[in-house]
Amino acid sequence: MVRKKSSTPDRGFRVADQIQRDLSELIARELKDPRVGMVTIQSVEVTPDYAHAKVFFSLLAGDHQACAAALNHAAGFLRAGLFKRLHIHTVPTLHFQFDPTPQRAADMNALIAQAVASHSKNE
Image (cartoon, rainbow, N blue to C red):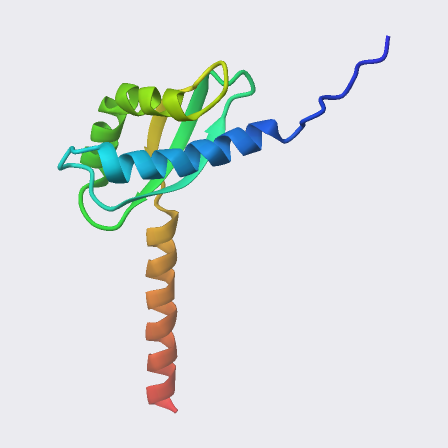
């Protein structure tokens, strides 16, 4: 028996990408929680059965733990908003996690700039 390959092998990536775009818009326009500041959705990972989605976010300023708690508290509201926008049978349960990568990159850039400036003074 020969198994037919899926005609859309990258469907999971496309669904995750659409969730990322729609969540960014929903959080910016419809979420009124003051604990949620300037949030950027960095990436979304969807399980193969579309039951769960890990949503990685960064924060421009504020307490990332309070923001994560607020986003996870609003996950049902956001999921309902996604349900109206996405045309898929199962809208995943959302799990928000803080992604420190952008902050680490900014810290590394600052250290590099400091080292270059220090090196320039010594010459």
